[in-house]
Image (cartoon, rainbow, N blue to C red; front, side, top):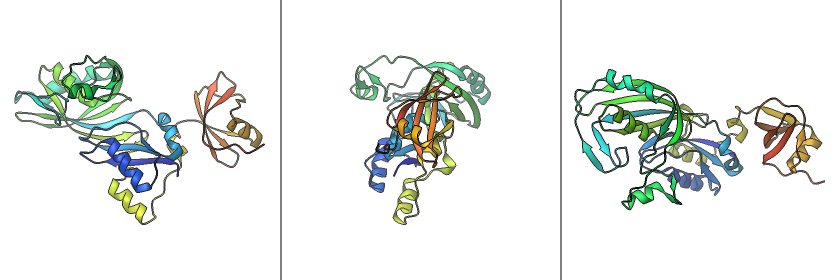
Length: 295
């Protein structure tokens, strides 16, 4: 049982909780996720089962979210799950004023992660140190945001803007909400988040934990083959002897296009793994998923 699962993560549990439940449901120990979602976020959580866990880094990197930002509120976690620090009503804030600052956050930007985040600081998770009351300077990191599209506006004492966010890996949407507020000199937090796309998987095609359990119980669930999630990588087919040699760790030499990574197959259409192109003519085994035939 090897492949990728498009799970619809529910509200209120961690990504690790989802992995644990899927392990029990499928009776498989080898399950991993491709990108953490906070407990207060829902939506697409790519999961890998079996040998596909070795392929998580090769899933498409772009992500899409539907994010709701509440203005006039500040917490220590930059979302509504944290300790309330400031409540400053902002009834005069307008949608046009918020939209005017959004272009400043499109492109390659420097972003400081939230204090309560999973990044490592001196060998410990930032949230572990924050929970102990430590103030730890978090280094800025470069992230890329491709598009911010306003979808809805709710006026009031604590107005809210809902955005469609298209971004690269590593982007913290909680930090984005906080920083948009700072540009307006108004505190702001993330009040709702749905990941609509991740790892090339779409929310419309996702399965809830309940749906997965029901399909497993009725033997109607099928795990898609791992290479179905990797179609953004070009394919190459090897003849029997070169394929077997490649699976044994030998470099295959042929003329290739200018791609760093390839999906490698044998002539029967069996997915052998991921090859790394070296120079113009070498395909080095990077991840081999099948055992080579004995000599």
